Image (cartoon, rainbow, N blue to C red; front, side, top):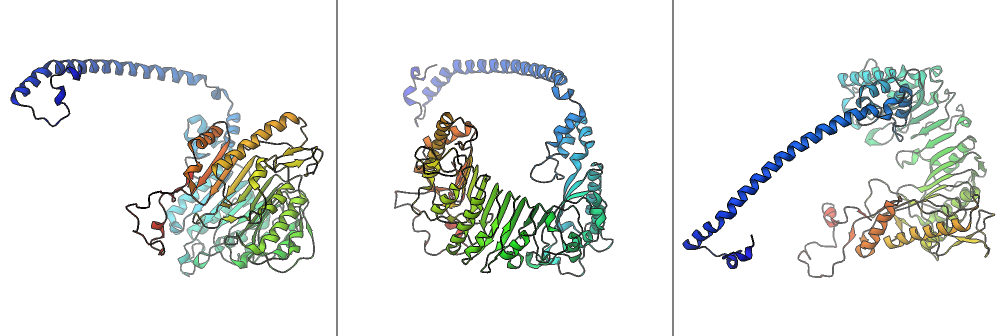
Length: 613
């Protein structure tokens, strides 16, 4: 029916009130359409019923087919041994297994009867466990008894395999100095739980502890012959009053370190009482980590102490240290020929002696992290030292360096000098993101100098590289390459100067073009290659201008993601540039004063959320 043919068309969608005659006419006019509507509704109901029947038949057929096709599933023909091997690849890679039902190995026991039987009979699935004791439950006998039974049941499934344990128990700070609150006293529930764990000490291979000193005392009393296979030990500093790390590890536990014959990996969050004990065989270590939980000066190594320690560990492969730089020089030189992974977090507010930067030689480095401690990111006085340290370490390992992280500020020309030393570099991170910081705090401000850093990475200012030598050569006959031609992972975190989305897009495209062009011109597999970026991560601590993120740019980034590139670019909201200077809300807030109660109000709601490009 056409509304235009209605005699009341000119009155429709108006406020006209129908007269008595018009009302009778309208009722008569609608009699046929209303009957037709009823017929249509009845037909729809009939068809819905028919569709419901068809859908029900379809579900039955799908179920019938699916249940029979399950019998044809290839995994059902796999032997239990193969399934067990596959299960081992499902275990968490970044942390030990937990009692979480949504993660393996417990998740594997919930799939079906067969998988449950296979999982429960595979010892290697149960040879590692993280145990957590909340301080609110450390006096709950029923809770601790259940936790102990669960631990025993878990570890019994591991057969006779070496086991890896992670134990965390943080006591309530208010109870630390309460003489009546001693949860690890004899015959206490926690003491019983520790005894349960100590029963398995002959099988301890990897032990991670974040527990009070009283628990360390119990472990320190374990006879050394029961720790004959312990290879890795990680000890977090016990918490003392005011939620600060204790400056004294339990002496009996420290003494125990001297009696671990196979210990090769040592990680301590607190080392002050260790004092580099002469009885400890430092030369056995292949991995060493001394990173305090906070910037408490008493827990940070002096630079000369760190070098003295490293001189006793010639077999180190991995080393992570926080160092307090000061004006005491170290005359000797330390050479670590096998070291391939080095992390140095340096705490310094004043200019340290440049000679310290020349004290360490590591010719086999493949991974290097140089970082400043919190609050020291932009200390100008330390820039010459960090420059010399980077030049020394990168120069010694120019052919082996693959991963570099720079979380200190030095002028960009010096950054370029450092990167020119490592043409085989595959991963570069500049800056860092630290938790609990406001968006505009702790940025890494790199003085620009007379250098186009992004241009050199893009190839617009290409670096000349000779194929017969991996180091840069000033030869016009050599092929031109971008800075760090083999770079595949690039991360800029809280770095200034900032880079707009269009600049980053051009960087990706340019390196892709160089990669394609260079590969076609240079088939030699042993020469320095040029590769396209696979990963780009950028976190800018400032808002993004909408003009820099046009739909075309956003679409281009999305296309790169669809092609397999990993891209994450985040800004702290959008930059609000309003052309209207007469907004209704203008003048409601005084920009000159921000109290502790109003600073969140002052922060734009748009900037409070990250914007991803």
